[in-house]
Image (tube, rainbow, N blue to C red; front, side, top):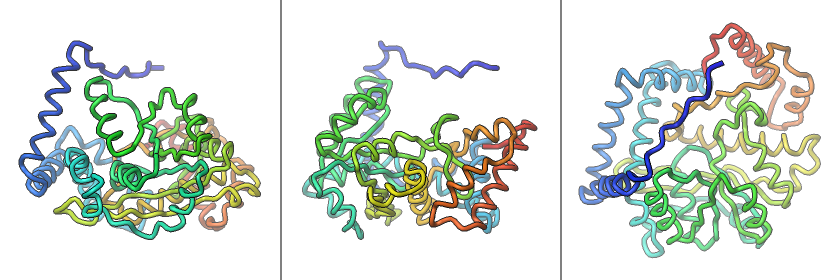
Length: 356
């Protein structure tokens, strides 16, 4: 078996020059203005999306959209794939403007607060709470705005390899009240943070590997982190699922939306509380994606890891089928389709033809 591919690391002596270059590059959009920079980003996104070197990722995005939206034709899927790249490149521009647009005095001119009453109720209980979103919309705007509203949000993140750049990111986020928690030390820090009643935020749709909990996501099993559900169960914490959805292509304008608030009383009596909780927040992320599919990063390897029964080319486990029957939003027809897709994945995996 081939070894795991090593990630390239920038030598320490280059950290200063690289950070200076990146900070300088981020100043260019600010000087040029938001509208002009956004237009350049769109052109760059379309060029990159159509580049020969990027065909594999475009093909993956199209395949993922085929799974998520089987009723769409390929023209629409391609249109959304291109829009997904445009969204990604716009996020780069918006990152440069976020510290300037989202301040105590100016955030209300850029972010509209939607129907978030239940979520605010959960946050105002003075007890621990967990906030999650997917790679849909602008997760930076979501964290920034909640912090500016006065909630002492602690967000899990992967530190940047370039130390001066990482220090700048921390400094700008902490200026608005958002505390970043290094994911590599999170096991020790998060229980202490939650026990003090502070909300903790996760971007929760990453592939969790072969040991993740496999729950439905657009009719296919997706590996999902157990840690969020386990923390919620340990601290009796509500799980709030939301997103910041872009409203205006020409301006920095977003709306905060809540897809679901999962209260402890709703999962405690489930046959498998961890499975129920994890499946439900995955469903909330799915609903967020459906509301703005062009603002989701479809090129990510969402379904990369496969469950054990598929890797071993075994029949779909009856116990897993029963767990899915306990999810009130899933019909027998939904379950049958997912089982059929799982069987197809197992056969493709055995044949070495599985696309993820």
